[in-house]
Amino acid sequence: MVVEDHPEGLSFWLQSRGIAYVDEARIGGDSIAQSKLHVNVSMSSRMRYCPSCATSLDAVATRAPEAFARFAEAHRKFAPPPV
Image (cartoon, rainbow, N blue to C red; front, side, top):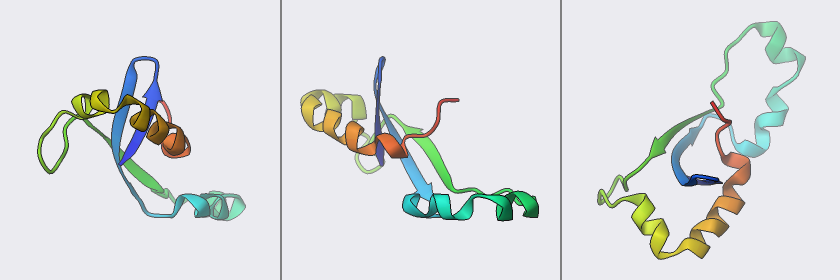
């Protein structure tokens, strides 16, 4: 799970990766462009409720705002790009 902080509040994302974040730069460049392949590096889906217990994630974050702000800062590099 990735926590993202933005002006409207926190967002929670369930993310799976086909390639480790640290390896993304290694697959770029001419080899991918010349091959004309479409590579799915990661998939992110926004979450509003805990998949285990159905608790609102906004409610959980409200109970520990400082902790979730730290998570959001640590996860900044993993946050999906704006759509």
